[in-house]
Image (cartoon, rainbow, N blue to C red; front, side):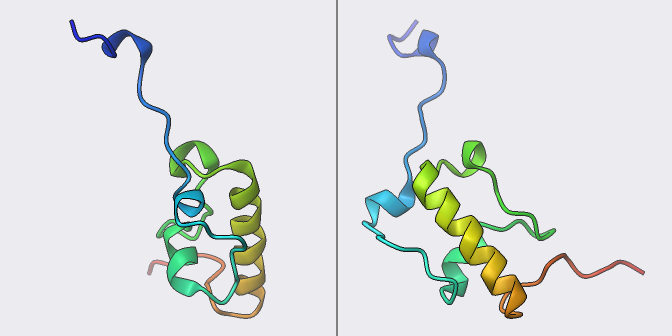
Length: 79
């Protein structure tokens, strides 16, 4: 058995901290699109691996982008 097997999965690292992003802007659609599922839900911290500060900034930016119609509130409805 390898040494690291019994400890469980590795902790995810905040990609925004690695890129040294100081502020998540609501106009950065490409970054926000990765933080939202195809159904329109914001991806939680435990899944994305973001730190608390950046996750709060992402949530705020996604909500602002939705109000300004840069991002959809929900996925396209089915027929």
